Image (cartoon, rainbow, N blue to C red; front, side, top):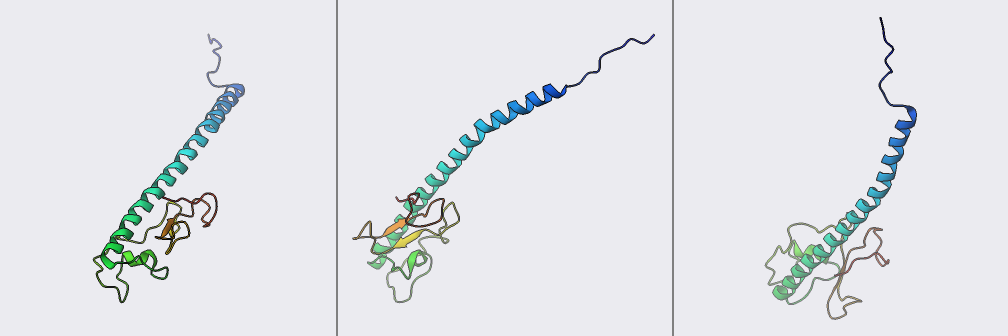
Length: 135
C-alpha cells in the first residue's frame, strides 16, 4: 500500500518572500558600503597629499625653491635641468589619486601665495569643484 506523502519544497510565495528580504537587506547594506569606500578614498587622498607635501618640502630645502608649474611634481622623481642641490628622487613614482587622476600642483598657490597649492580633484575628476580635497 502506498501512502500519499506531501512533496517537500518551497512554494512560490515562500521564494518571493525570501527574495524580498534579500532585496531589503541589500538596500540597507550597499549604501553603507559605498559610503565607507568613498570615505576611505578621501582619507587616502589626504594621506597622499601629506606625503607629497613632505617631499616638496625636502625638495625646497635641498634646492632652495619649490618646483615650477612646468616641472610639477615630476621634479620630485627626476632632477630638473639646471637645478643644483637635488638629492632625490623624493618620490618613487608619479602620484595618482584614488580616482586615477594626477594631483593638482601650482606654485605659487592661490590658496597659499607664499607656498604651493596641492590638491586632488576628488571623485568628479574636475579641479575647482566642491568635492576637491585639500590638506
